[in-house]
Length: 448
Image (tube, rainbow, N blue to C red):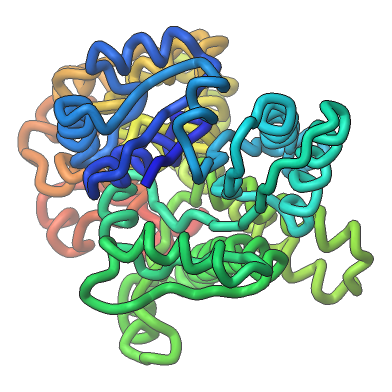
């Protein structure tokens, strides 16, 4: 098929490259000319496992095309995916300006029938709004061209986006047109040869499925972090409690891992957006309180490691230096949006501490964007051990694989004191204490 993807970021690029891998001709449009020029030269703007090989394949076989030109994209696409950002606005609701901008461009430029697919995470009613904008632009031009607007939410986790597209847990398509839904099913069929996981629902149902899915996963994280807080008070180990819970098939095994909080581009903004939508439709307070608690617990959780550091070293951290492993919000990505590391660094620096941070992927993002205004933090992106000398403790903020089996003797020899703060509960308590460390983790018996 002839596909267009508008917005070549964490969603759009893996999606486009995966469609090209299946033999589709894909035009990738982004308004960032520098990004497009880089892609034409094989420079990817994001880090995703397997993505570089897919992009190389698509370009080599002339299936993947990069452009900033709407006319070129619309002339070569029968289905156009909208994968632009929907960041939280000032009030926390989804900012639809980029989605609406695309709708205006499509309506004012389209010359052939097209299926417009909302791939971005958007609140209920967005497809109706996009349809109205496109129709208004066509009316303005005096044109009658057939088009359809479909909701097709993405279910991609950063760090495994390619796998999530090529081996989808489900494909949800919201459309009131059976022929359009069938065309989307045929497009996705090569990804589902081992079993049909295609769900055709109404447009509003599809839009809500995405928010409902992400919010319940975020709820599980906030819930187990609440149990972790209870565990700290009791001197219990939340890892053992979670293990017992996960054995119940009704509860499931995923997302019950206590940590220093969730971040990224999805959970924080989707929970916020659902809260704002619920407020907009005047959902009763008991339901609203449940949604708000998910966000409130997570915001507090990001500060727990900093609180443990202060409890151990005192309110005034002047003259203290701490090593930090992990800047991104999770392993195998350079994305720092809503990362717990931002909170940890900010709160410790505000108390006079110095931070030396290591991350294999996210140093550039930290230095240039997310911690650019923070004095007292320096970075290393090649050797995690080199930052330990002269530090009072090591803090771990992500579950990156290379942190999971480190040289503990080397760590202990480099630090001023053998103190470790583990925001991801990577180590067994007995093992780390037998190695001679003071060990502070999440919900494992050390009170704040």
